[in-house]
Figure 1 (cartoon, rainbow, N blue to C red):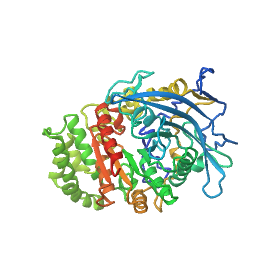
Figure 2: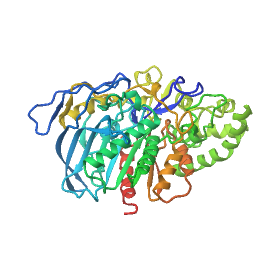
Figure 3: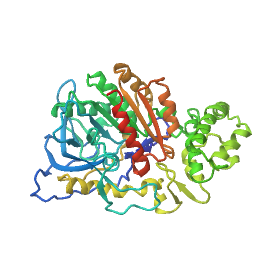
Length: 523
């Protein structure tokens, strides 16, 4: 997921929206899943004696590639699929020296008795930076999922119900969920330290080395390969795709779940001042939230048409008014403020005073009374002062602990893997992260994605966004991707969901259908 960046990370004007855990997903830094001891007699089980650390200076003296194996069955559309789950570590090596750099923790699900050459394989990771892959792993398209049923205004029971996932992608691809350095059970290998990989470029390079190691270790050179990144995992995917294509590892496609491809275009990243940017990309999201909470006036009878009108307004009258406002604080025409009020229910006077209201303001003011709307999913709300609102995002608070506990139990009880240390679902190292990339203080990774497409013109891109996501607004993603030009291989889909769209049952089903069509493109 995205987290707000501290101003000490980058120039003082930056606040930063960076995904936290889910990258989806977030996590409270104090939420750590304790180690569990598995039954020692389970076939294929692994009790890893290694103590892993997420500390900045964390560094393993040595690492092995041991793994637990477990068998499973999943029925999808009436067809039984037998699969093997492999849980453990692979050692990434420096592309030039060949020396070991990172011990990557991963879980791979592979269908039994399938030809590897023609079987796609998809690599999943969350964002943050600082999130392990538990959100995508137990929430999206793996063989099992935790029942979340979002949006909801009450905390999920712990432990949450674990069920066979009717929307699993296992029938169309093998699935590999991997944790970035310093999260989960992934750690740097000496003389490297975890913090050496806490940056846009070093992080993507380490994951390039992991993908190449997995491909080599499992003879998947001929398999169609896909990347699936959420939130900060979106820019990670763009950079990683370029690195892989440059290294000769050809990709079939990339999936961007609620991405923030260009930090420089997201108005939540910059405070008011010389570097303030327009919130145009947020306006249709504000409108969607206003309609959902019945604050829009009039209420729309045709949501698609309503959102289309909000896009047109954002690109037209709003954009024209924001130029003078950003340049010299010229007040917007009254009609612009009136229209913003009609879309959101937020007072016309507030828009007249500041037509560039940021998403944190909308969180606090889109609902009457002292209510806070969710950042990851603004359909979820809680009273200010309530425990659900205390962390700044009620939509994360209702699901967080269920996933933290769920991954602990799942690794031990289902996958038969344990370690001698805590699984780290989220590591709050965002203040240490090097966001600089390609000469900019914060990354714009649209050129990286463009470079990957240039290297591989057949590369497919699928972008998945939620209408009610205040971290990575869907329209800003559309604007960012439009910079790539018209390309039939680029598919954009939006859903009635938040940041982690797969936690919404209807959105997950719709997304799974779109993923199925995407994987069939060009085949």
